Image 1 (cartoon, helix red, strand yellow):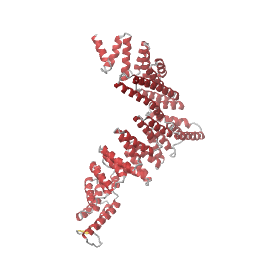
Image 2 (tube, helix red, strand yellow; image 1 turned 90 degrees about the vertical axis):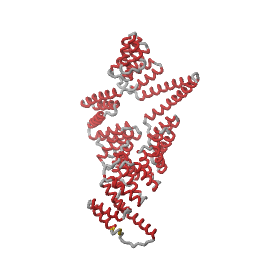
Image 3 (cartoon, rainbow, N blue to C red; image 1 turned 180 degrees about the vertical axis):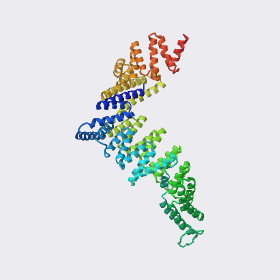
Image 4 (cartoon, rainbow, N blue to C red; image 1 turned 45 degrees about the vertical axis):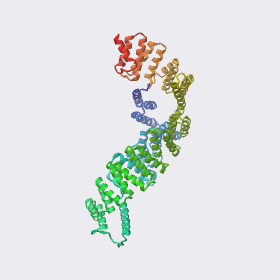
Amino acid sequence: MPADGGTNIVQAARFYDKARQAFESKQYDYAISLFKSALGLDPNFTRAREGLKVARMKKFQSGSEFGRKMRGILFMIQAFVYEKLRRWDRAAEKYEDLFATVPPQAPILPHLGDVYWEGGRVSEAISTYKAVLEIDENDLYTLRKLGDIYLEQEMKKEARHYYEKFVALKPEDVEISRELKNLDALLTIDKGAWEEEISFIEKTVDRAKAREEAKKKIEELRKEKEKEVSVEKPEEVPVVKGIDIEACFKQAETFLGQNRIDDATNEYKKIIEADPANAQAHQALGEIYIRGRYFDQAVEEYEKVIKVDPKNKAILDSLANLYIRKGEIDKAIEKYERIIALDPENPVTHKVLGDFYLKMGNRDKAIEVYQKVAKLDPKNIVIHKTLGDFYLERNELEKGIEEYEKQAELEPNKVAAHERLGDLYLRKEDFDKAKEKYKRALDIDKGKKTIQRKIKEIEFKKFDVLIRESEETLKVSPDNTEAKERMEKAHHDKLNLMIEDCQERIKENPKDISLQFELGKLYKEQGEVDKALAQFQASVNEPRVRRQCLYMIGVCFRERNMLDMAVAQLQKALALNPGAMDEEAKEMRYQLGQIYEKMGQSSQAISEYKKIYEVDITYKDVAQKIEAAYRR
């Protein structure tokens, strides 16, 4: 039966109240122990976590300055050792003790963020890294770490914020600059708008640079036309229909510098009226429309630039972003496809195109493009993970494993990659490969108990396969004696192995009383009622499993025909949550009803069945029993 989460929270609150009393009495060690107990029951109990920090601080503030410094050095050494051993919980505890003894320091504080992150305590990791930035806002490691965490949490806006700060301090970092561009595109897709006008203008066009490039292109096009008609023109200031083009451009620049936007617009329109194919003027006018947030007009101008200069990747990119702004993702895709045709070896552009297809719901096309990215940029860890996830969603296990293998090759020291591969091979029932990957993960993080458990569970899975195969054989040949014996043996051996494993865990964790309850259930399944009863009685005072223990004790008494004692235990269990009628409560009342019947107390039995009938008429044979009682 599932553990009662509500009971855990209530019990955690009791530990918290006792911890507060101990704290107020200055019994700091006892308070720390109680706060930890509360967090063990409810890891999200914020007040308990804060109380633990304050209690630690109070504990270590007593004594001399020299003593505090010596304790701090000891805690720091212990924390470094545990971090090296990858025992994240113990490392975090020692770092917390350290910073309760001495003020937080920027060079060491990121280590606490790292161990929180590795230990799966994401919110605490983020808070710690932010505390580092309060001490040193230019800490590059922390800026990048926060960007990575927020990106992994799919919080693109926050990731972009920290990557942008990182790149401002270290513009030569190609990897983060590329990630920043990807995020710009993804945020544009997600929001359909830019948060600030200037960010879009900066992203799409650097005006001075773009104009210079446009002027060069115009000159090249003009020379090509001159060659076609074999006409030599003198080198002079271009004049079209009485308009001095260069003078108009200069005047427009002057107006822009004075923020006279309307006057600058008129100058560009004069140029376009005289020379409709002037790409430079169309581009400049498009920029002005963007500044005024007239996106439809900006699109018209940029499209005219592309007609004159179809290979202008910067304008194609700007058009793609404008179409995203308008919600016309299909047109944005068309522009990016044209960019890719001009620059087919650019993995970043392919990645953005794949993200566009994904946003439109075309997963097949997105996968196709991501596969190209993987070929162009085989060391791109994110793309291998993305492809692996897609393949697993489509139940293409072999392809998913292949992509995760590539990720593991690129991150040979990352536990999560090898553990994930172990999980996938286990799902495939390739037990040898699964064990190999789990052991590789353990070589990196020797203290990770969850992986140790998974290695043991491989043996259980092997028995499950034997049992399943035997069941399939018996469906076809019900009288197959060999299959029956094989299945019974597999059940028996698996149960024995589970009992041995549970006994080992009890030795390793003698204070975890809930393990005795687990062992009791295994003994009960084995038919060892007395052994089971002993374990249930030993664990009955553990708050997390008390209700279930009382229920199982009642069942054991019933099997030993101690019916009045069974009734007493079941009533105690129900009294722990008197208003509940969950599946557990229904089963307890049903058991009570059967015991009362066996004791010849029909009215009490019917009373229990009625309580179930009132909330669930379909539960077992309760409806038949109630109807039969009314007929009598």
